[in-house]
Length: 401
Image (cartoon, rainbow, N blue to C red):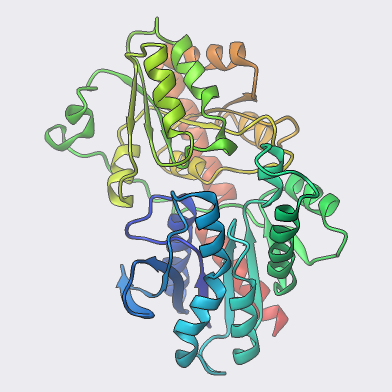
């Protein structure tokens, strides 16, 4: 099949989980014999559209204003224009034979217009990989008011994105429940897990190790990598770092960008944390090398969430056989999935005492870290293989035709 993959962020410069997932998917689809074109925005690009190859994946980059790490108004405006700018840039390259199917990714809700244009020109089906229920999570976080004009604005684009999908894939059974509760219209939905390439990265030699560069050679590193924002409730993990100061060999390393970077650095200074390091985002190759050298994979979801997300960063941890440690909102089925498979320790956000106990258990036993990390890798192979996901997506698209 000739497939268009549409996402608002892509490699090689992005460190976001969605970008890595779509790249893994593109490579897998190509290995299966499919023809893949990724369509994604490029900030500050002079030409309307450029074509490049990223590890053998053809990428069309269309010119766009910034949509990451900018003010809310600027971001909303530029995201609103994504479909318009994308179609204006690529339409001369699209005819009825260009694509046999479209796979597009949300949390961006603004690609509905572009998908609709491609479907009409190519007479092909589409699949929405829905990872975030936006704008619901920003309502949960108190960032916008329910029933407000801005909510209605976002809802318009959200439903437009849903309506052009022949199938919508959500992360879990709980997410499907929440989706049904908030959407009166009936959409074709199914569970589609997050995914990852299951081949781990081998750690670098001591001379080039990031541990050496940061002088963390003998530390047990609790690592968080990814978006650092309201949805994650990063203060939750900072309290854990504070509570573990007596564990002198433990060190907390956070890498990423987002609107709570200032908060976590302020807390580190306020609490005089010596067991904490923050670094801005690095490219995916560097990120993989870091994952190969840390000991525990951290994550956090805000207690205010009503949606039940599966953070994609967990897959990166699982690939490297890292034990998972973190907390979720009440009712999130991720807790049962990970805990029942002994792939990590997940608590309900707010139970700082239990989170600390779990963190100390992993700190005190290298054999426990190894055992739980091995279980995490087995869970990855069973539930989150990119190969099985790619086959499912192609099958769904072919069924429509």
